[in-house]
Image (cartoon, rainbow, N blue to C red):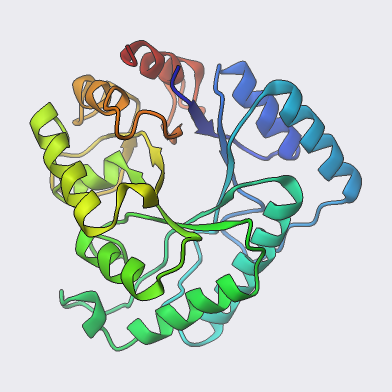
Length: 282
């Protein structure tokens, strides 16, 4: 049985997110620790930790991830960079208290307009130093999970992941792959052959043991459009067969699959999306 879940709202608290996942038939969870569009740090009491931990065990929701703030830019060496580090350090300490596996993060942007190898950007050393600082100041039981991103963002291709993972050389740094982002940036996984080529390339460059989870999202935009607009499973340009191949490939099928879809009712990740993925996992 595949481990399929969703990103759930924390309006009403972390407990609400757990209950929502159960209602839509999910078995794993991603959520924000606080508002993703502000620098406000989350606060949680010991009683809330105990309530969350107990309910999570009762509902058998595992694993649970945070998704970091959208404001994060670890390639910045000023105010934004410092705020990014403070946010992630605080979030990963809360993750340890809650038994959350780690934070999925978009690393940010170098702000440069030209396309060059990641090591040649002027602030690449800043990026590495900021990531290392976050890792040094956070519990060793937690993970920093880098998500693949769009054309002007860090993590837009496997070459950048290869450089980052090699230079950081830290087992707490893992990878999250978003199917919509792969589609947008020109990686084909739409046939068994194409998926095999991609997974072999990923294994050679980064290592499949570094792949922590998938974001399973269809795309509203054509292949290699460099646009990041999620769609419901089967309603977008990626198509059902791609997800069928992915869910049934033995190399990755045991990993968590988290949807971030708009929902068939426009209200966010829903039971219909989860059920479609379940039906594709034969």
